[in-house]
Image (cartoon, one colour):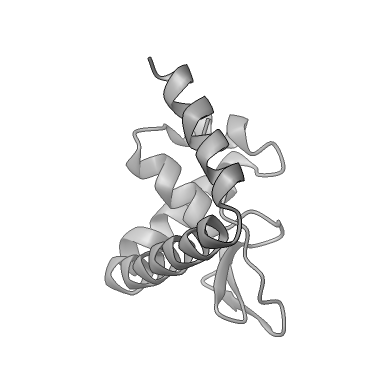
Length: 116
């Protein structure tokens, strides 16, 4: 199962090379609500384009290949974006852990139990 990153900026949409759109600060696969980050992370984890399409049934195989091609053509830019997403995710996770320490402890315990 792949990790899905939900993007929350939808103020302006700009199509980039046919297969990727910018929604504000976020990159999305054109014609879908699937983030480019979700496709790229799955591909980097070793999923084939066909497997990625199976994980995201809203996408056609052509869209998956187009998203990967866009990533390869703009790797430095997209990698910088992915790094920003990761920093933002970690900041939000820390904020939530501080707000809900008991829940965080329960969730960590459950996660550890599934991995033992």
